[in-house]
Length: 497
Image (cartoon, rainbow, N blue to C red; front, side, top):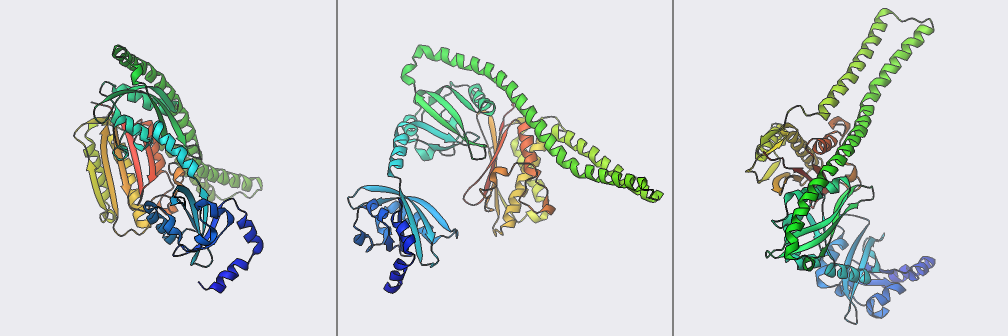
């Protein structure tokens, strides 16, 4: 960039420049090669160099090696966002490490970028202390680990990468009965938290006792999105004589608590069903009732004004009213089917359900150009409503296909995975269709919410899936966006034959 242009840049908007210079944040301007062209007063002490020294170097040379690639990717801004943020570590002049949170914004001149920097070294240090000394983990709604502290890794003997995406029962000792895990799951569904003690097992079969506290994590919309688990190592407090009685007490307490929580869950479920059913009914009935009311009012108005319509018009109006009344009756019938499964539970291998779902999906010839990858760990049987579960999987397959088509993905792939852990069976449907926008993902299971055109539906598919899973299968369904698309996960308690 010509020196005369740089001088003009410095001279323009002097008042704005004074504000920038007095900002608490470090603000700099770099070109595409990351050469520092301008820095404000707050930027200088962050890195410990003199101002003239900083203006002679490329900012990338100060960034630690493992952060450079991500920084450059954000700099190129392949997502075409107006600004991007990243946390990086830089080497100060005194050889110390400083952690910076940087927001990169494009200027009108596309060759120049503004970097807004905040020193987060203290925050990182606090996080590292928590990571090193607090035994904790985070799981998704289904109990799969998505984060674990180093302190937990040290206690269990697992590396962090060995724990990620594994079910938290990976640390479960064989002496810890499945009823304990059932009690935990029902506690989280009913009271949104659980605390108690667990006998656990590390990677090398070492045994340890932990006191656990599980808390729900909420998003800004009030939805539970994950669970945080805090643990305390109490191994030294449990003697061999205490173990047998403690394990026995755990089972007895779990049995009592499960009965109480089943009652709570039943009441919560009834209330939720009543609320959602009334909302759905009011939506379905609104248009037919409006038509009936309008037709009846028009007929009454004509008669009151001595403008009696001929018999054919009256018959036509009454036919319309009868038709709409019949529609209201049909809605009630549909809701009865919706609230009560048509068939009894049957004993079946989950592989049969998946094979049937894929067969139904591929019966539509337009779906046959989508590659479906199966990852099935069947080999056992469980009791379920097979038609309902099959319909849910077909619905998820169709949604995945529509996302692939909508986003013009050339090589569309849908992966259908099934596995089981302890007394739960899991189904996952993922795709490479681009994912779901974070602004709407929290609405995806709401009634009448849809990302599709009107002609493709009214948004009852995923809502219906959720209600069937929660009401009839006593399970959980969730969704998240991964690197290339969306992933729907279902977990259902196994009713053994």
